[in-house]
Image (cartoon, rainbow, N blue to C red; front, side, top):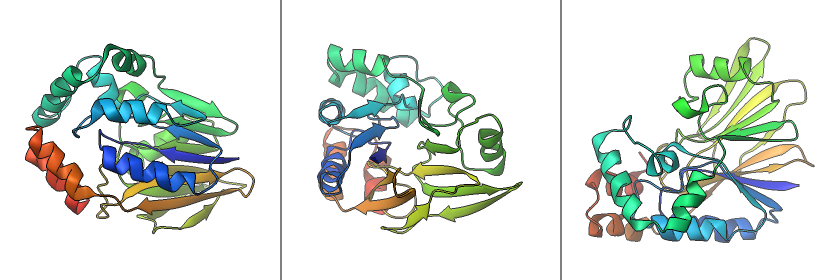
Length: 244
């Protein structure tokens, strides 16, 4: 089974289409989206419709998805502004779909969530040692797949120590450890923040026991221009061009 794991589309249709086209060439059997289909970008409705059209796909709730159907009180002002704008762009069917998403899902010996496995609706970033340790300690899953940070990463726990692979290059394959537990962050399709503006996702091959990190070129200029044309905050347009 080859599973494409992706997250944080953030209403970036150009990046989403590039991801879909790339994944279709890689013999993917199933897809799982780890949330944040909307937020920041200019094409929320089109992205919800497109991602739902993918075959054999499952979904996890992200914090921006949750904010659109709830209250975005914990977000910064610019992000809240986009959330309010996004609510007006989505159809009733898309809003109902986002409201129906689950916070986590198990598949075999793997657990999938947007942010963290122990308090999923508090949206902690699994990025520093404290939250990484808690994620290992409070989850029994052998493999944990997350998004949320917009930074691709692989973390392998060996006894009481963690070995980090930060910013894996395109095509990097990390073996699934037989004796150790691991956390994999797929990065962001629509708004990477690891210095590489290309769309980021990963493929988990359950037969070959490996995780491949993939980056995909897309038209950042058009996606950025759409954000400006919609009157959304400039910072979200600039980020697409720099990947920071």
